[in-house]
Length: 213
Image (cartoon, rainbow, N blue to C red; front, side):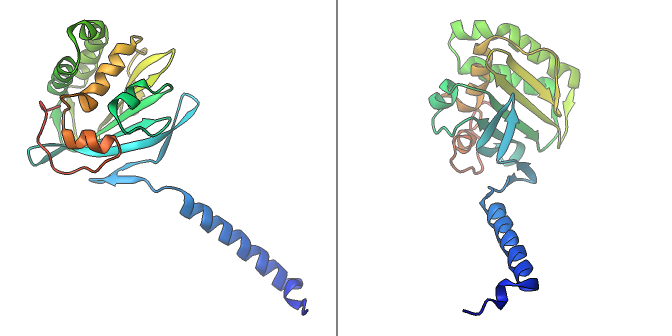
């Protein structure tokens, strides 16, 4: 057997080629970000020491207008609202605005969506958190294209509301508040039925359903 190819410069070349091949394989194995209307949702996200995966992402339409893009992050993939809500561990809903909107109006629509998708008894439990959320949106006045907000649930800590990546005060402790928030998008009367499907791992298309959140 001719061993000249395993000696000297050839050995170094083969080693370098092997390293490059391994790097390319690893790069191709990494899932790509999901891009919607110019907004990129990373395939994974670190939250409270856990690595969450993008369960699904979609666009909220009002008639033909794109209002925002949303992505749902969970510890494990889930295909039903019940599986999302009952799954233990941190969760995060990330929303990026695609057009300017009055922040107070958006807050009112979210409150309406929470109430419409909750029983009266459950909604009463969300009132302290709902008032806090209203204060946060009132302070912003307007959200413009590119602004983002997120709601992040961490067991034992509560729900943190973030605007443009910055936490807005202390976490809201009541677990009912986060569940009610998630029902805005995943409840029986969602903001947009096609967005609901997208967040649960399905496809997303133009929709005008829901009360307008």
